[in-house]
Length: 139
Image 1: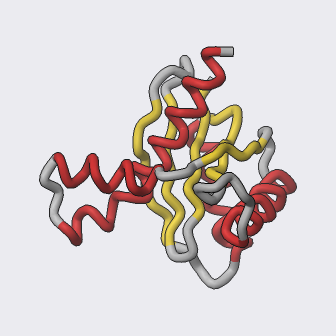
Image 2: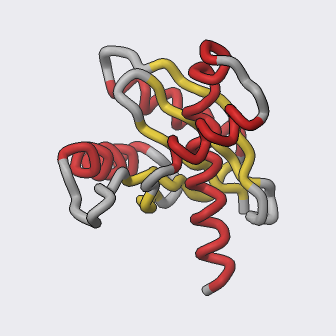
């Protein structure tokens, strides 16, 4: 089953997708946020249909100390709103440090500043989705 991973930011949504066997996550794209979340959600619905995803995993930015702050609350609320419009199950997964990990990986690959900012969200989504895939495979 193909799984779609989302890193919900205030300006961009990073998108990652797994292979059909659910073993490997890859960066897919970045959606620019509009003023209307309904339009953002419609774009995600279209991606789910296009990629034939059977599940969506939304990154939950839990604080380093394990508390659920305002950003995590907003992500959880948006995940719940997505669950209302998507034809597949939606769940959240801890995304602590995924953007830091993605940024470091891109720096190691010598991706320069502007180019790195264009792709870091989709790479962060892939890091989160890979962790989710690994966690679920271990169960």
